[in-house]
Amino acid sequence: MTESGQQDQAKPAKSVNEFAVGWPILLASIVGVYASLATLPFYAVQNLFGPLKEAFGWSRTDVSMAVTLMGVGNLLSSYLAGAVTDRFGSRPVALVSGLLLALCLFLLTLNDGNLQQFWLTYFIMTIVAAGTLPLTYTRTINQWFDKSRGLALGLTLLGTSFGAITLPIFYKMGIDAFGWKGVFYVALGIVLVLWLPIFLTLFKDRSATHQAQAALTATGMTLGQAARTATFWKMGIAFFFVTFAMSGIAVHIVAMMKDNGLSAAQAASIASLIGVSILIARLVVGYLIDKFHAPPIAAACFAIPAIGCYLLMGGGHGPAVVAVILVGVALGAELDLIAFFTSRYFGMKNYGKIYGWQYVFYTLGAGISPLAFGIVYDRLGSYDLVLIVSSVGLVLAGFLMLSLPKYQRTEAQEAKEAKEA
Image (cartoon, rainbow, N blue to C red):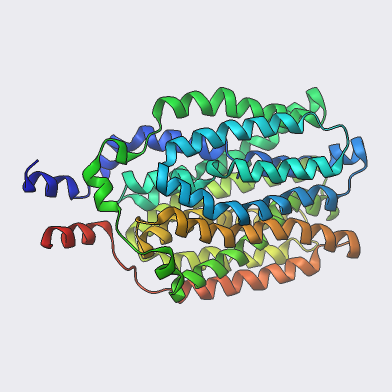
């Protein structure tokens, strides 16, 4: 190939061409995130408090421990999943992990009331299915999209929005038909019937067919270089604060509203607004960070939802609606921003490893908070204390976002450097 041809391939495509070429990858990634470890077992816990208490007498703290163990598992597996994905590519890692996720969901249906077995299965599932997390799909999206990267990432992570909107409905249908096991029957069906055929048909790493693009995106910092920057730690701490607040609220939101006097039907109806809010936030935030410097946008998305924490402390129907919408804004922005900031500040050469460590901060907050919320409620009879702590953390996360610098390099700049070299 001529030097001119190499340079032409190195130029980032226009936004319209990126979507025209990359839409199969985008669709497969949306479904992949929907049918992932980040959605199916997480939202299952939200719907199992009542059924498992009725079936086995397990408390909210008992059930919430499963999410905490997922956090511990993610701490152990996120970096490894990132390193393996950098080495072998997203497709083989996601395929193997998706099948193992299905196996673990099936094993959960065999539980006969053994709480320790329930916890252990959740923990093992987190380890073996780590390759289904957004890390895998966002890595490939970053390969296929540059100028429209923010919007493409936002669209990819709509999978979690669709999960928040539809899974409570599907899980309730499963519970009505099969009891608590119905939750995992539904999740298993989503993996095998929806995700698997779409993934096998549409999903592929760009490096498999576009070697010039692969060489271009194989630039950036090593993990060690990234970890020596203040940006790396500011991002990680901010994402920890946000996920501590948001994960605890997401898991306990229905219980909170029922404690505040709303009926089960009202609480479920309002909780479904989280998914709508997440969906809108993902699209709006994705569009905005392609057009403007992202940290101030992130600061607003993280700090403003602190108001929602206060509205959940004894508020009625109206305050609950506002609180849920604000919570959805933060949930809708966080995962998009982890992927976007990692690629823009540190490059794609070691994206999996660096994202994996940022995801450690994310999952540490996500793992601790549901248990913390459950313990506070079981001991104090109220969520108020942990909601106050969460609101403070959200404001601090906003300030950390405002302190982030300009991006290091974009792929367009890297292409120019490659051309000049």
